[in-house]
Length: 143
Image (cartoon, rainbow, N blue to C red):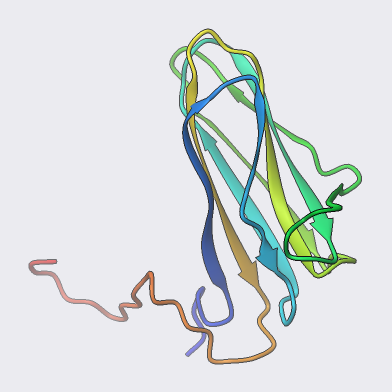
């Protein structure tokens, strides 16, 4: 049976409760053996502001020479009563390591941000996903 997590690997990239006037970087992912990665960003509501989510790549896992990937900047807007959400997907990157970069504007009150990644298209199976569970044809009852 093929499910969403059959050939994917989710990871927490960055959580910051005080994002304000800075660029935050995710821990990054090793793309060896994967076809692509999606970075998903959420930003808590507050005064109107635009955050940016972009991707960087490097040939080394320490991202010492990380470079932005052309055209990957996605604006994530928030408002007084509206949380922000945005994502970017990178398919077949040219370098082995990829990470998200979150550009946070200067806001009156720092915002909470969260970024996760999902690598997909694993060439080597089975994929181990110890952070989640799969349930098939589940009956009603106590969770």
